[in-house]
Image (cartoon, rainbow, N blue to C red):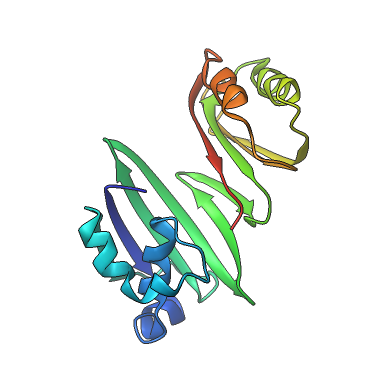
Length: 183
């Protein structure tokens, strides 16, 4: 959970978000609550009690899905920008992490690895996963440029064990690694 969250609501999220409980649902998600948790209706009060500074605003993101939200999150000085869309039927699609375009459904456990683009980085991460007996279901890699900041988004068949996360975090060019549970 972040310490601070600024959430921008676009399109129909902006016009009907509060009335439909979008603010409650997004807050509950940031708190790690499950979609069927009856406490979602109290998510804003819970966020306040847990010290989560959260705010909502209307944003115009241009030509994107009308049920899109952007999140500016901060925890311990570390910042992250996310963009995601509710595509209907309870399904979501994460479309942006910081300056990188992604397509993450949240259906599988996932791993997000921020690193410097160097030869062998993908192999080192893949080896750590194989050593942890974790199978890669899908992988997307994007970079700002050769030798610059890059991002791996890896969906796996099983959660990544702490030993594998530690091994990946210790790879010299890795900046940050985050395991993400399925939604």
